[in-house]
Length: 112
View 1 (cartoon, rainbow, N blue to C red):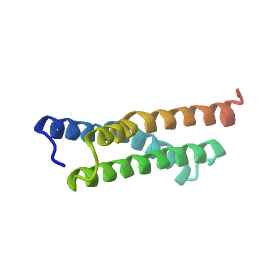
View 2 (view 1 turned 180 degrees about the horizontal axis):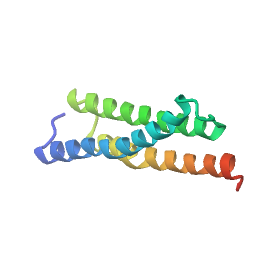
View 3 (view 1 turned 180 degrees about the vertical axis):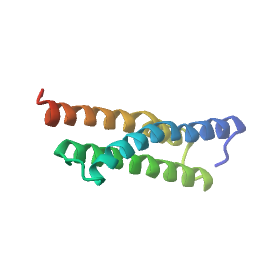
View 4 (view 1 turned 45 degrees about the horizontal axis):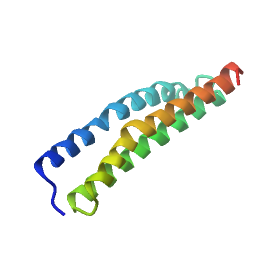
């Protein structure tokens, strides 16, 4: 399976866009993680936020590796590659954000 030049360009643009949510999640992970690892009253909510953000980072990394290897070895259709990229760009950060908001509202604020 060979990809057209426009498909290659679109793939690489999408693949590089994985760095945008990964940067913001990594920044949040480092902020909350520095509180947890420095011994600052590690509340349950801090640990949960670090776990959610760390898991999201690992998932984005796995999506990047998966799509790169499938693109390099031409083992996957272009439609499937783009769906994996959209999953990494939009779905994983959205799920991580909603999970962080829910856990913060539940554990820290006692709202839900």
